[in-house]
Structures are given as structure tokens and as C-alpha cells.
Length: 91
Length: 455
Picture 1 (cartoon, rainbow over the protein chains, first blue to last red):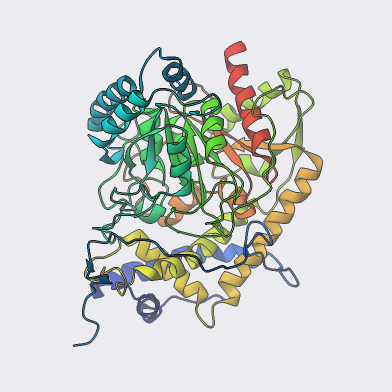
Picture 2 (picture 1 turned 180 degrees about the vertical axis):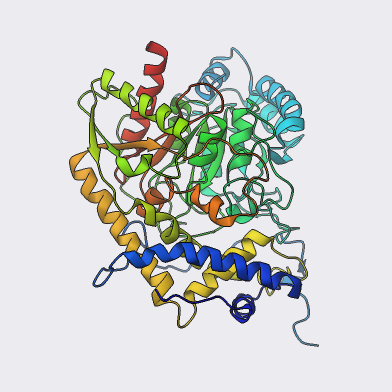
């Protein structure tokens, strides 16, 4: 892991990629917090993981086959004539 | 009364589900002004359900394991026809159309669901302070946190409002609040209880489990909920069914030195060490072991969990749920950004991929240990219940509270927290077993409870 500072731009970029809104006045707080967190996580650098196989699951090979089955009824309050009502995406 | 006693009394006709439900509702009304454990109480629906059960009478022999037993459900688990919030304003107006499999199974055994309990928003937190609807308070001391994220369920059981509750555990969210509230909390082997109907936080780690006042009750609820489910692609088919009770003579219990180091409070260490010694009186043998990667579990866990969360929570982007305009709270935002960052181009290898490799090392280390010992024992939480507000401005301090629960989460192991007595605020003893040996973990926990009485 490389040592690097988290910039305000990194924070804005992560928020943008994730589609969450953060106010300008919050950017510095998140920047400082993420930097502290990642600084602590840097202890992982102590471990040599060269050649170690990644484990992305708790148990290996338990997935079932995908099969298409009937869907579910829907009870969203935003339902209108069988469709979801969502905010306008384009003006 | 214990859950198994309530079910027995309702089945034999000594009492009725309706009587039980009425007195439960009264207790909830009393305790709620103190703990604020519930987001919703199903009043009057729970009375209607209890009345129907009373009218129908006890089920056929061998069924009705939870007949008439009031159960609280963490509000990230679906109960059809009742709002589900995840402690967030983002899901406002959402009402699940189906029961979670775990919920369906307890209903099939005659349980009465009394309501939904508070949690950190989307189960992201260790104190229940990150709920959009306000913090829950610890029933043992209302100025303190009940732990989290299943703090509402822990407080509801701890205050005596309900005998049983469902929680979910991703990095310790059942075990840690159980420890801080002085109750039993069991995280089953990953895949032993279906995740269908549980709102996803980190899919490779999330697991539903029981919270109760005794290991016997926790085992009862687990027995009802466990089993293969075609609706969950990671549900296990081959959970080992072994007795939940019996002696533990000859059992080898590993005690990892790393679980008793910083940041553990001295009083917690002493209490847990004394408690573990009791096992020797029941014929178990204590073996010193070493799990040197323990201190890397918190960073590996948080990188893994937040990466998975940033992908899982992308579904609340407003396109399908109309959630634009509402917003996540600061802890969820922090974690989504952390996860997005660790998955992003240029950082992926150094963060997410590195964490996955460390996860392998932690898994291997446990596999190695379980070749030598049957169970592992240590503290659940390095600290007792902390003051509300004490850690909310220091995410790193909050994350470090999970130092002893996250290792087993990464390895998918079954783990239980049982209260181990002493003066003052509760302390939890954690017992971990190899994957699929849920029965063994529950048996040892039950034996431990028995020893306390007999000594």
C-alpha cells in the first residue's frame, strides 16, 4: 500500500462515483476522517501477501445455479399503474 | 419467562398466546420510555395474531416450537405488510411484499412478531447511535449505548420486554450488543440461516441470528431458522446437526493470547480469564494458541464490508426507489465513500484486493487452529458499554471496538456471546467454533451457563 494523502478532490470524486451528495461544507470533515481511517488501515502493509490467493467469501463454492422463476408482487407507495414513479432524470 | 417455557405453557394450555401477548405489550410500554428499542410495535396486529393462535389452539405434536412466543425483529429483516426502514430515511414508504425466510420459519412455528427494533442505519455501526430515528439506550444504564448494530434487539431482550429477538451480524452486530446488554447473541456459520429478506449490507459477511436471555433459547430460535433455502444463493445444504446440549468433557478449548491484548480493558480481561477457567471444572482442557493476524482483522473487514456495501447500496440511487432528495446519514456516506475509494481504479490492488488476501490468511489461521482445538474462547468486546456520544466523533475508535468479532466474521465461523457475570456493567464471553459446528458452540455456551449456577 502506498502512503498518500487524501485530497478534497478524492473525496468529491468518490462521492460522485457513488452517486451520493455531500455539501461543500462537509468535504473537509470527510477528507480528514477518511485519511485517519486509511492511515490506520495502513498496518496491512506489514503483511506480505505476495502469492496469497484472495478470499472474497467466507466459504468457497456454495453458489447455486441461476434459474428464472416468477417475480414478486410489489407494494411500493411509489407504484402507479404497475410502474414505479421516480423523479425526472432529465429536464 | 424463557421462550421455551412460554411455548411449553401455551402448548399445554397453562396460559394462552393472547395472555402472553398482552403482558408482553405492557412490558414493552414500560421499557420503551427507558430504552427506545423499537421503531415500530405491531399494536394491534400482534394481538390479532395472538388471538388467532389462541382460537386455533396448540398445533400438532412436534410443531409449535415457538407457539405463542413474542419475538422482536431487527428492522433490516422483512416482515410482509409492515414498513421496513433499516434505521434510514432513504427507505421511507417501503413495505416489503414478502417475509424473510427466517421470519416465515418462526411464524410457521407459532411465534408472535411484536415489532421492529432499532439499528444503526443499514446496520453500519457498533452503537445504534447512527439510526436516523435516534439512539437506543442500554437497559443496564440508560446513559450508555446498547452496542450495535442490533442494539434495539439487544435492548428489547435485555430489558425483559421480549424473550427473543432476531438480529443480524456482519462484523459483530449480534455478538457485541449482546455482550454490552448482558444477553446471549449467536452468529451462526455463514449460510446456516437464509439471508433472503435481509437487507444486504455486505453480502459475503451478513448473517441472521438469535438474541435471547439464555443459550437454550438461542438454540431453540436457531433450530427453527436454520436450513437450506433455494431463495438464498449462498444458503448451505450441509449444516451439521448435532445436539445443542450435553457435556463438554474432554473438549479442547483454545485461548488465543492476541484476544487479551490492547485495546482490551483490564477488567474485561480479568473477568473473561476467570470465566474461561470454569470450563476446566467441567472436564474441558484449555490450550494456549496464537492467532497472529488478529490485529489485521478490523482493517481487512472494513475494506471488505465497505466495498461490498458501496456496491449493494447503489440500488438506492433513486432510479428505482424514488429516493432522490432524501439522504444517507454521515456514517453510511463515510462507508460508501471508503468502499468506492477502495474499489476505484488505481487503489483496488492496494485496498480491496489486499484485504481479500488478508482475509485468506485469517481464514487459514483459524483452520490451522481448529486442527488443534475444538473451540476458541475469548472476550466478545474489548470494552464494556460506553457512554452515548463517547465514540461518535471518532470512527477509528468505534471500528476498533470490533477487533474481536471481525476475525470470525471474515472466516464465516459460528460465534456466540454469553454473559459472564461479575460486578457492574455486563461482560461477554465469546466462543467460536469451526464452520458448521453451530451445535457444538451452542452446547458449550449452555454448559457454561449451567456451570455458573452450580459453582
